[in-house]
Length: 555
Image (cartoon, rainbow, N blue to C red; front, side, top):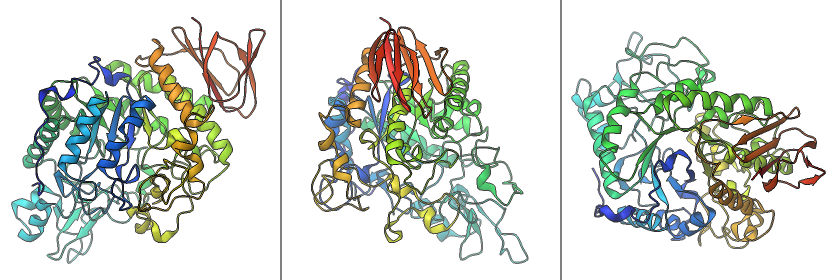
């Protein structure tokens, strides 16, 4: 379906310069790039693949292992590229296939792996399949590739069932001939019918296309949503969105989805180089999440339970224990994440009172939020398994909560319900320099306005500055690599600690995180490796300030 010139497949030697560390994904630190907001190479105000390519040395020097790219496929951009019109083409706003090929090659040359986003739950309404389905009308084979149904009511004027869109409103839209089609997200994102064999065949072909290009893996968008309950039954609840991630839903986390991933795993295992799958799977429990990472399915799954946990020692310990216990029987690594392109940045979440969720509209206490964010990062990087870093969090960026309504582009915002629709705040282009029309993002401004203080948070402003958040991340990732007891694993040894404090040992490594609002005294466990704030030691004891994490080695 591609309308672009196809780049030559990467040769078999393309991954030679990528470290051939077996099971690299079990302890990898993976950096999420949201391409439109990372770096703009041509001055059109929109980030692109060439911009990402030019900044790859920065990511190598930061110390990450892999780069996950959010969608850059051909798309009308109704939902920032998560509405794909052509899975084998690059949208012109981001470049072309040759740019993608060059990015992959350069990344491998720098020792970085590339993971691309894949969107299998739905397509764009401009996808050739969907346009054909509309043109051919009711009863056509093309409509079987999506979920078309007659409506209820005397004249079919009511939706086929009571499902609600994640973005608000009904999950169904009626077309001119009277039938309705299912879209769990925006109307421009019709859901594929994964019971139709052509859908599975097409996506296995798409996997091979990008694997032949040399990508090292796929992050699977809405991995829990592909298979719907038989008969598309009503839910019977008028406030369904509150059930998401907390209850069993007929359109999410159905057992049939696992057969899809078993078939995909066969495709992936045809390729050398330890390619991986990562699931975005919102499930009611971490135990359900573990089903996605059984040995014959996917390699990792995002830990949304951890992301949504407040900065509270008791709650954090509970979710850490549950996560490790759930992953251990299936032999999969735990993953840890604090921010991504769909939630309020954790420097802002932690600046606000607990219990407000992951979409927050108030700036809160900036100093408190940054202090907690730095401490949370050291805690996350000390845990066993793999960790994810969202672009800009290494700069301590807050969410931009005061964007004018007229510049917002989140489709959920315009639906007036569903997700809060304030995801634009975490997608503002990141600052590279102190000065410039877009603080080094590009020569032509930025697609979302940046705050006036962005320059002081830039890479340039923080590089080489002792105590800056950027240098904290660089140091943490370096120490994580150097310490043999960090990285992969499936357990921690909890140590006695004051209320509000987490303390655990991993071999000769000790991590202590103070989530309380007051300084605490703990044992000085050995030589201090790193701390997120000022730490004092005397007479075998350490005074750990409020909202601070410290690392020691007993060696």
